[in-house]
Amino acid sequence: GQQVMQIPQYQHVQEGEDFTTYCNSSTTLSNIQWYKQRPGGHPVFLIQLVKSGEVKKQKRLTFQFGEAKKNSSLHITATQTTDVGTYFCAGGSNDYKLSFGAGTTVTVRA
Amino acid sequence: EAGVVQSPRYKIIEKKQPVAFWCNPISGHNTLYWYLQNLGQGPELLIRYENEEAVDDSQLPKDRFSAERLKGVDSTLKIQPAELGDSAVYLCASGEGLHTDTQYFGPGTRLTVL
Image 1 (cartoon, chains in turn orange, green):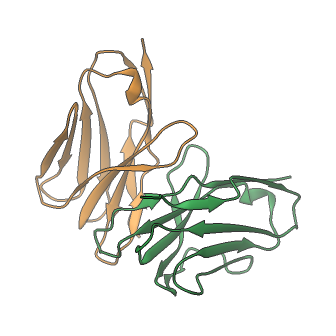
Image 2 (image 1 turned 90 degrees about the horizontal axis):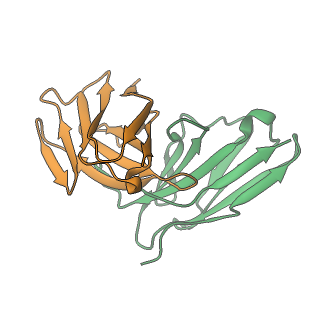
Image 3 (image 1 turned 45 degrees about the vertical axis):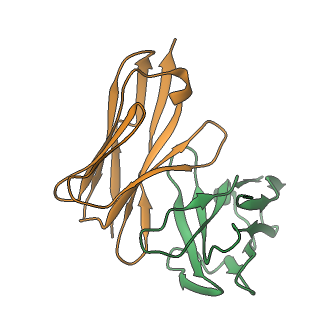
């Protein structure tokens, strides 16, 4: 079945620095979604990418979908303490299934 | 707009006891999902409903887990009997029913089995 892997599992970032987290699927995806889960909270939808090579930006967050639709990345610039949490990618397939990765947990050093 | 509502938020039971979780999705959302989330992991799908029909329950351990969505709105997830390994957060999510469905998660029920 479809598997989605995320790296790194943990990301410790100095406030103000940039970082990237990566998501890789074993199969071609119909779409990829990114969610953020704050400590003690529940996953909250951030964005969805559908097209090959698609790039979307939300303020300091840049999301990219690979040309082969098997990988994705999330790049955060000028990290802030509000960026703390776990970022999940979720790969969608044409049978409506959404497979979540294990997430990248981000901590920020002030 | 009200979000997905789940209750209870926390539940502590002894092993072999039954437990039930309730979910009220966002109004108008046809699709409802139950997920299990273990610490440090992403959500894992247990069951997906389209209206009142369970269209994907392949990951639901049917020997002890059951779910229903009788009127195509609220849903309940039951475990009977609970085992120690069932301790986790049980998340309910709803969506509009598109194949590129964005999922809106509830706050979850944190289950502890002693």
